[in-house]
Image (cartoon, rainbow, N blue to C red; front, side):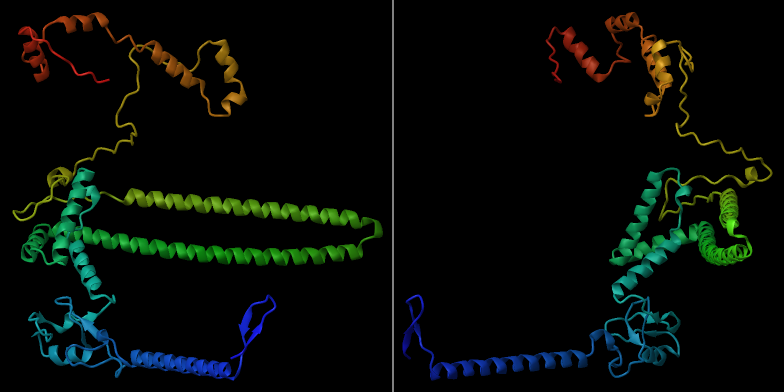
Length: 430
């Protein structure tokens, strides 16, 4: 291969027949590699499409959904082993039978088989267990005396659920559930009925709200059509009046027509506002009536030697509840019964002060939310803050020797150290 000089003086190899053969060889190798990769990809795709998933194969009859697209798999909450519908009909139609899956000897019944809801069978099992525990432990927060007691109840419920999920002390947990269900059957049934009633009320409320929204949309469409029709009629009426009027009356006719349309629009808008206000008032009355009908659910507290719930409110006696007038509910007090009355002075609404009088009428000061009464309250509180403190009595009480009955352990130790003549050192908190 000969060499030839380049423009910058360097020597480059001269291309010849050998270079062309080498390039064609590399191109042929690249084409063969690409075709091989494409064939491998196609084979992998066909294999993945033809190979059925393990979850689509019945563990009993080994049938595959690939060969039978209409195959349905069922699970039993007793052991959560999945099998096809034909195997269920064949094995369990004559009565209860053991599970045909190897290693499982639980007795299954046909009526308990159902279609799997979740793809993961563990999620299916957890949902069933939580639904079962929640149907038994269905206490409400208003049944407890404090939030701490309710949280402890929820923690105990979650502990039982965790034990069932992870197979920890299953027999003891089942005994607790059975004992609690037997001893609290009345409260459980009452809470279940209340839950069904609330669910039905919520569904009815959603349906009513949906119907009201549909009626509002229909009313808005009807009003829009009416306005469009009235505008068209007004426009035609204006054209007819202009055609029949004289040459100099056009401006007056247009002005009078515009004023009439404005009055009509104003009247309609006020009517719509009044209608909306009445609808809102009616909704508030319905909500108030619903709140007045709702009553607190007080259930009796029953304890068993296997499971006990602490912190439940005591149920009123049946004899006291009959023919006895209940005390009316007191108004809600956000301060919890605290009384804000002063012992030494009475706070007035106004005091004579030239500086405060100037501030009281200044809108620049009052616009930011400043209130002169706050200044009155703070000044009077600071003025009378020391009237309840008697320094002489406190000094006399400090100098008197504390008795052993009322002295604390630290004071007794300090007195003993002082009596022995020892030096007592106090820690410097600073």
